Every structure is written in C-alpha cells, then in structure tokens.
Length: 312
Ligand code: COA
Image (cartoon, rainbow, N blue to C red; front, side, top):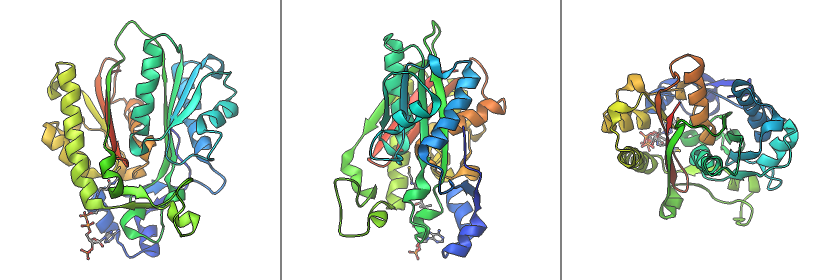
C-alpha cells in the first residue's frame, strides 16, 4: 500500500466544519485520514503501491503483462490510470485499463484479472485500487467530508496449481443510483460549477442499511458457492467505509470482530483502495499467514458490491 504523507485529524476537521472528534469517532470509527498533496495524483499513489507489490512478489515491471486499476478518481478522462501507471513504471505493452465501480473497484478489478490469469491469457497481472477522494470531497459538507481519505493498494496475481483466488462474486443495482453519487461528470453537466458537480453526495442513513443487507447476502452467497461456512474464514477483510457497517455485517454473519481487519480508524474510507490497503496492513503485521482463508468484500456507489474468497 501507499498513502500520502499528510495526516488530517478529526480535530483539524472540527476547525473547518461544525463537527467534533467525538461525533466522527462514534458514528464512523474514523480518527484520521490521509490527504494527497496538490501535485499528487491517483496514478502517483497507485504507482507507488504497485512498486511495493511487485517487490513483495519478487517481480519486475518487465514481468507484468496485464494491468487493471479500480478507481473513481482518475487523473484524467483519458489516458486511463492504468496507462499512466504503465508508463510511470516502464511496464511493457499489455492490456492496461481502469474499472469504475466506486468502492467496489478493487474487487471488480481483481475479478477481471483473475479470469485472465485463470484462462492463461495473462501470466503476471498487476491489480491496483487507488483513489484521491479528497478531490471530489466537499470540504464544507460535514456529513461527507469527515468520512473519506486518499490512498492506494496493489497485488500481483500469477498462475498457481494451488487455489489462490477461490471465487469472486460481483453485483450491482443501478436502481439505487441516487443514494450515493455525484451530480455531474463528463457527459452530464448540471448547471453548477464543475468542481461542485463532482462532489460526493450521499444519503448516509439509507446507504448504511442497504450496505449491511448487500454485504450479508454476498458473503452468504460466496460461502454457499464454495460449500463453506463462516467458521472457516480466518480473516474478514471488508471495505473500510465505517466501523459500524463493518461491525453490523460481522454480527449478522456471526464473525467475531477479532477476525476482522480494521484500518478505518487510520485512513477513513479510501474507496477502491481500502480493501488492498487493509490486506497489506494485516499481511505486514503478521496476522494474515500463508494458507489462511480470507474473505474480501466491498460496497459502493452505483450501487455496486462484491466479494473475493482467497486462500492466501
Ligand atoms: N458532525 C456532527 N453532526 C453531524 C455530522 C458531523 N460530521 N454529519 C451529520 N451530522 C448531523 C446531521 O446533520 C443530523 O443532524 P439532525 O438530526 O439535526 O438533522 C445528525 O448528525 C444525524 O445524522 P444522520 O445522517 O442520521 O447520522 P447517522 O447516525 O446516520 O450517521 C453516517 C451518519 C454518515 C456516519 C452514517 O449514516 C453512515 O455511516 N452511513 C454510511 C456511509 C457510508 O459508509 N458511505 C460510503 C459507502 S461506500
């Protein structure tokens, strides 16, 4: 993973909008978040996380033959962030693209890369989740600005005789498009300044309820598809949107919080970056060990949601 240097605490936010450290902690579990420097783009964060991932996997840019990035905050309309990172790292000609599925972006990207590796069409895939959500955050809106942060995480996928990614499951329901979205973008230009039209707008309470329901269902589906039950999961690595969503989901699934990786307190909701960041934290601190069964899940605007069951 890679996160920008600048830490923004709840106390700092309390000087900017009418909020308190206590409110933010109790409603979301968030204590601090990282915010990218003005000259730091999504591709910079993603490129640095990718470099770490390649070092950990013992591969070089020359080995990569497939590159996919989950992001909602691309540097540019085009070239896509995948191409920018390909150029930045000197990765040879290969498919390079980004997947736009909000906070589920990494799970979507992982699922696509898994299919290419499993069918032999890719031999070494780089999968990245990277975001600069601070660029689409309305820093005057207390109901959203306290929740989001910037960061990136990445993994390398290679073929193996042993199960690595056991299965992935993707879902979306556009009927919920209005509870979590931006008012404008490239093709849709509402009558407001462009910056403002890109701000995240959210009906928090509704989002919370739908998130818990969708995540519970996708975890159930994932386990049923593999004839497993929750007691066989060593680690739940959820999208880090909110401590209370994570807790409610774990409770419904009867997974003790000791088996849940939590980083939301340090980084807030980093959208597509949050799951690979949480994975990295738990691998680096020794919690996740070879052979452990991991259940990754995410939920985001669209609505989109998904899961990946992995034997690490
Ligand atoms: N500080 C202080 N008060 C705040 C506040 C803040 N940062 N943000 C909102 N409030 C106020 C509201 O204005 C409201 O005041 P009112 O009752 O006078 O109208 C009150 O707090 C309660 O608001 P509500 O939205 O009902 O709070 P909540 O308990 O639902 O918590 C969230 C708000 C956003 C933390 C919660 O709904 C949530 O986590 N939703 C899911 C969000 C999410 O994870 N989205 C991303 C999914 S990928």
